[in-house]
Length: 457
Image 1 (cartoon, rainbow, N blue to C red):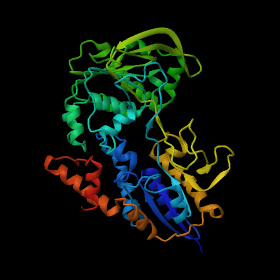
Image 2: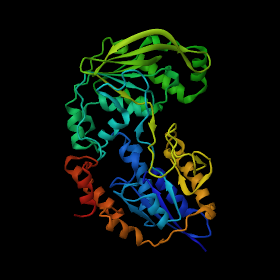
Image 3: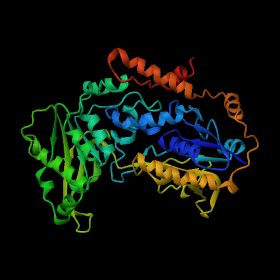
Image 4: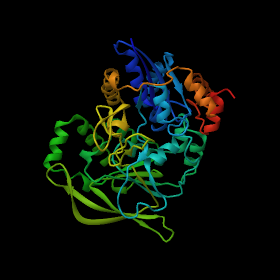
């Protein structure tokens, strides 16, 4: 009977689900799993990619924690792949590796001027307001009028955090530096741009409805965007999700703030549909000064076409929320065009020959791109795990598969890794910081402090 020594790189939902499925699968061999994470804390984008005022989504952490707390998976946090541990190291100590490193970079928006000062990627802003230890502690919120390009849930998260009053975030786990930054914000108007119509947005209805409940924020929609064609009317009539989204937007049209007239709130969130960004204009200092966009219309085939009508909106900041993109890993095949590890059902492929790379697997967004919700991550992991189990013939033959070898290797290299007990210490520490203020927790943001608390140093 064989024993599988498996490394998983990335301790977000994809990596933890893969570990759980492997340990629960019926198989003719034992399995021992080590989970490597570059951050001192686990849970990936659930901890560092979900807005702090969405605790129900963070409830996923409870399920992930239950998996880790069983005690049959070892966690090595604060370990950077390619730096603290390499692919050659993994080959020496494991039979195979699953990469579940996700997609944390912003996808590009290829229009003139996008490189202007105060033009940002949404993912960087999300990392800041979620207290990611590897981004700056401050964020420039010195603009009055801001554009957000994109009509997915990330665009909504960014827009909501920009326009929401900082004190309304205090009951959440928002880090201290983030609350201070948002409290000093000068923003009064946030403009969200989508190149298609209201019935083609990617928001979920619940996220959209929550926007309209923000205190002292007027929702501004424009009547010209609701002249629906037959295809749109049919979509609304036949799809419950689209029907609910339309109902929410139509209710906003009846508010006094519609078309920017008569609202009394101190901040406004504008939704612009049929609006394709074509240029970011800069001032003499190279900062964002305006967004030029083209009005679009339905093309009759489910897409849009330009009308030739250009409009210009003065803004001082822009956030592109047009998707995430994966990052290459040292020594691992990478598809630069799609931002993923090239793979066949989770088995890594040589980019030139399309031959399967022995011992290397992928799951989650680094496998399929940044699409789908948490539920997709589970089914995605099942597909990969099946090939890991059945790929015994292509497993590596490690020189030293002993479980003691990894702590010894990391200690020899001076890596201050964190483990599961350390995460519990940090978790309890953050909750304790929040208790005197009636807050869920106060996140520790500094990496060195996270490591010190985790290691009890």
